[in-house]
Image (cartoon, rainbow, N blue to C red; front, side, top):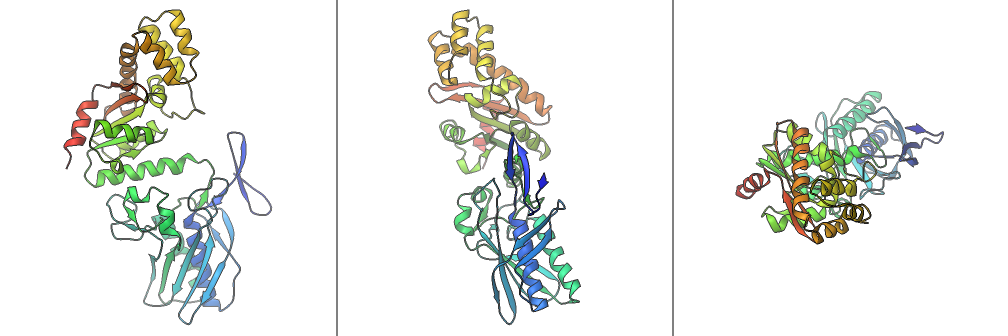
Length: 382
């Protein structure tokens, strides 16, 4: 990460120079610090400085200041940098009032409420995660100390557009209702960061397990979610979307004590797992046709068929070649055996793993040895 004289932060990802942004947690912290500063100093404020959890100093504009006899409210705008997400551009407000004792932090309009166990906050709390709560607390305490104020401070964080924004996020799947979450472990948004995606997977899995799931059903994306409805009765909202992060999903299942983990995936993504590839994004590896060709050779395909498979544009085209030559079943058996091997190898015997593989044109292609067992546990669950 590098900075420029104007304070902008940049990172390099995939040979691109990308501008960083700041999290909703940083916005809430800055807004709270600005509001309490205005309240105690009796002076206007157009910019506020905070230090994020990773040590970065941010100077952020203070917007929409409202002053009343007993409270001050102001906002800071969320900036996703070059990694624009659903919250980019939203105003995050903090309203502070001096009542009671201690520093109390809660959520207002547009900040979601936690309704399920296993998330960062207890059921019933506002979805303001632990790190932002701590940075808000420290920033408010710092200002109170500076102005020799020892009374109580109530801080209400709100996002007026939060309820509408939340519909575009994973929050409803996670059991966070009525708004967005105030999040951020570093305070900085790095473009194309895998950490945020993996953390979403971990959070969703932890929540499913805390609410009684023994086996996790993981789907890489919408295709897997749709096909799952044809082979099991598990509602879509109870599936964990694991994207390309197969390895991290297995690691999380082990860490959180899952009994089993079942993947349902399109062959186009999961054929890579038969080659031991645990992050299936194309920029990491794209050897789908090579793997299919190798297993076709093991199944006895001649050189002409192998060349046709290697010359295919899409995985589905290669499957057509296999089907035409009565090789689809033995090749899929060989591939699912290898998928089973690599899933088990990653899990190290600490969680039962399985996979069901399908294609858009050919339907069900294969199951690993534990797939039906895991599927039964999922369907028998209350």
